[in-house]
Length: 313
Image (tube, rainbow, N blue to C red; front, side, top):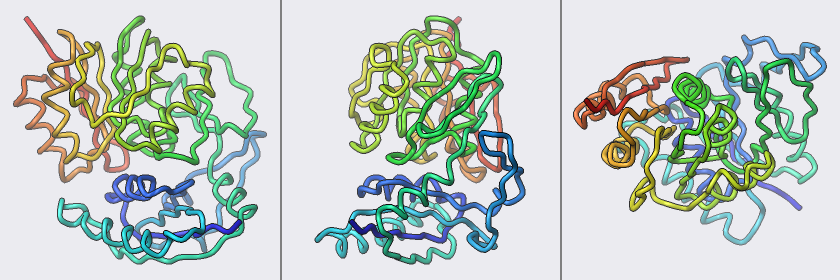
């Protein structure tokens, strides 16, 4: 079987939006090639340092690679991808050079190509994300999130995911109820349970993301305590929660704020990520206008995360 590898040369600002577009259109695996990775020391599961090939990375911006099965819909799908990426400029997202290259890859080469990018990743003091095919011997006090990152965006390697996980760890209490809005791969749902939550309700509109959340939930044996549903953000959701976490684009995040307030219990927390620097003030103003109190603003590699609280006297 042959696969089409599509390579988009874009910006970090457009990373999540383009990844979501590719996943929404049926990508089977998304790989990010960011030149910042060249400056970080890499070790494999045996502790040996390995090096990345700088010739495969852009000098500016990033490459987003996605893989699609060869079929009769491919020609139309190519144009749809181009059109939807171009439309991102309408909502203020900088897509940079936006050049697109398409290659043909044999299945065995595809499997090895995207898997080599994912290694065990420590995302907080306690949590380590381990790809399902890797062996990892955890250290004392570590907890393992097993992940198959091939189906949906959100493997723990991106700053927004790390910010979300660290935010969860800073406020979560034993037996909390958590709503994960825009669950992607399900990594935040799993992290919530491992951090002490009693129950998580995961929502995503994208069928690929829903299936990926279910698969990763089951991989971690959490079928009974992570409830996964296909839903448009929090529309129609009435489940009360102690914490709502949402790692989605800033413009979409604005649509969640009112429903988050309504679903949160008094003194509950609203954790948001996926916010570029240029849109942080806009998101903060919306959150505060609804009545939330911002108790933390965190930043990592120019991405912003807020932890807000529904303070009720």
